Amino acid sequence: MVDLVIKNGTVVSGGREEQRDIGVTGDRIEALYPAGKAPGAAEVIDASGYYVLPGFVDAHVHTRAPARPDRETWQSATKAAAASGVTTILEMPTSSPPASTPEAVRNRRRTGEEACYVDFALYAGGAVDGDTAKGLADEGVIGFKAFSHGVPSGREAEFIGLCAPDNAKLFSSLSGIAPTGLPCAIHAEDNLLLEQGIEKMRRAGRSDILAHADSRPAYVEAAAIASLLVFAEELSVRLHLPHVSSSWGVKLAMQAKERGVDVSVETCPHYLVFDREDMERAGVYAKINPPLRSPDEQHSLWRAVHERGVDIIASDHSPYLPEEKQAGDVWSAPAGHPELDAAFPAILSKVADGLLSYSHAVELLATNPARTFGLTHKGSIDPGKDADLVLLDPSIEWTFRKNEGFVLTRDNYRLYDDFPMKGRIVQTLCRGRTVYADGKITGHEGYGRFTAPT
Image (tube, one colour):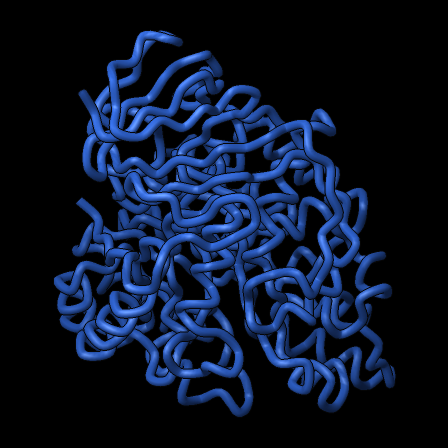
């Protein structure tokens, strides 16, 4: 006898897709059974016609909670996560104050535990000294995050301990982080080349949205990645490369992996489903760092995904208010786009398009991020793991509408608005409890747990 049985579904995990029944006791997976062979249970979910996937681990989320409740809250972000099959969000350190001190990490943990609908983990600021890094690691963070560029104008309070705009500062920060054994995610764009590119566009009198893309071409990202890989090799630090937008960056990382460098590569749905032509349609709402690339570059990035050069797909959810996006010109508008409601469904839609299998999607969205960040109890459907489960109906075709999401800045979904989706998540379970079903949030705030690497 178990508490819950999910029967008749096609279970996707560990590179396999097969008809199995799943037994859940408490908040953990008790066992997997041949189809039709599960024991009795207090509750039974019939998953006939559905794929059953492990709950997704979104490795790149900026809620900034609790600092900017006008942009996003823990509640709104984790509701959107639940509706998209995300049962664990990895929250970036940008906030006010940022998570670059142990006290700030403890405060963010407390507020998250009071409010989240799904589980969450925290990054800490990565432009810190070794003693601070050790103290942050002791708080249970899953890794560190730093930016290889300067502090964005007007946002100084959010970026304390987060920016390392030159190689000397980057090397020093990575030196202090290496002994913790935790990964360090670095936003990789070369600061000097960025400044040069923006100045070139300004001198040309350009302030159109494509000027943003033209100011930071792929070599700006690749140059930063090349330096970081050298530092990672020298220091034996675990390096994570978030939101890689170009195949050039992926190739550099693949070469480093062959030399034994411990590096993981993340890209984002927006780089795989949109390109610079979409920037003209969405305008300043499509200002993202790094920028959307050309159709040819997107094709090369998909090839890198197929070759397993990309380890993780994460949302990089980064919401702003419409008035923030629309204030001034392209140079003063903040970079970022809401993602949580739409990004992972858009990637799952690519299975129907023949660009991915569900097994590979599970690797990218669940198994690999859980493994990379030490969340050993998540990421796959196996006995003893958290019962984080997603039921997906592959037969449903639907259209994403920007105002139907759960995030607070849903009006800013200008890239995804009217995006055709194939396959729909119908139910999400986080640790054995249904938190989303049939279009409605069924969980409650404060259910989500803080999760640390093990």
